[in-house]
Length: 203
Image (tube, rainbow, N blue to C red; front, side, top):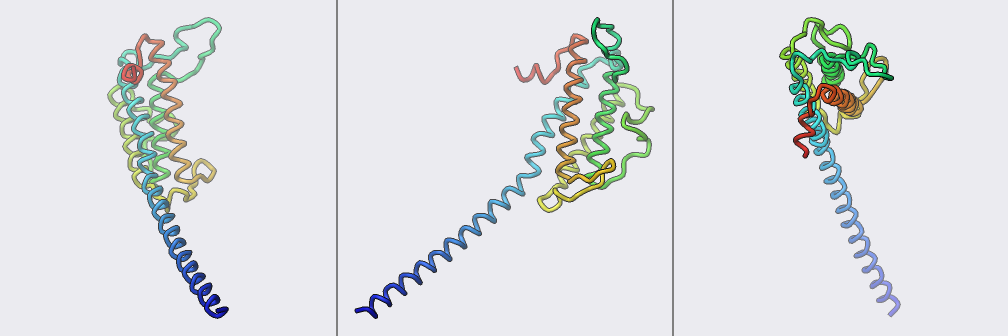
């Protein structure tokens, strides 16, 4: 009777061990699927933010008439304000686009165009059309950089402006920086009596 009981327990424990092994295997498989899915969602998640920011900035830049592209709040001489030396509307866009090029090119490892010598971009770009084309080209570089991001290289450390940042850090830095200047563009547009297109579209 004791021997039969021992055999029964032994058989039961073997079954339990086998079940545990199967469950553990299923857990590992499920975990690997989740990790694979999260790595696949990395680029689309960044792209969603990128697409919104790109659309808002391009539509707002296009909304400003060419004759007001060099507008600056300094010209309004508003009492109790200090806008001395701030960038013009065109200057905002040129700086935004230039930093786009610097940051996104650091992610891809590409060289920046030869006529960029500082953070405000080439001095030869002056007309509204040329400025918009320059802006669009900077976002095109960004799109290539985002497409190149993977779960394997996203945390690779890259030298950027005397410090090391991961590719993922740089991507979010580019998005944050662009959005900051979009906010300033919105203020400039409203000072010129223009409602920013993204605001109209969201109503």
